[in-house]
Amino acid sequence: MVSFLIAYATWSGNTEEVAELIEENLLKSNMDVTRYRIGTGPLPNVNDYDALIIGSFTWDKGATPDEVKDFVAEVGYKPPNVYVFGTGDTQFGGDALFCSAAVKLARFYESNYAPLKIEQSPRGTQETDVINWTEGVIKQWSH
Image 1 (cartoon, one colour):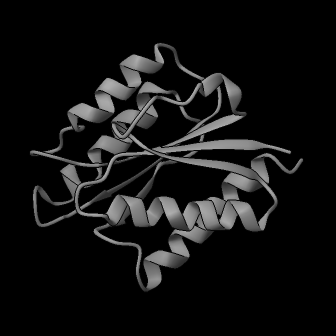
Image 2 (cartoon, one colour):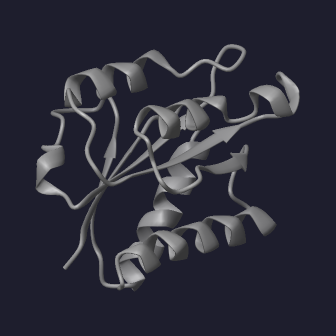
């Protein structure tokens, strides 16, 4: 069974909603999933998982939150299979800064899968975007 660690940072709850939806869809496909809110306890051993899914909101004019940077530093290496999602708000910086934390994380981890970008919360049509993105992740492990 393929195992995923979903590590995410959230303040407003939007990124957590995305993480929960990703988890729900991975579990429907019989994947093993651990969901971890960054900064809320001991760091899970990333080596124990086949893949890392990391989620972050974008903060302060396109910045990655400090707790996410701390998580990356604490992991201490770049796992080979990383998928990234993020939440953001185009009213703060427009398209140029929208979900830039997710873009930066995907670039840092050299992810071969495009980051998922969600405007605020994953409701309505964006819920479908999360499901489709997660199905794409699952397909990479179903070959």
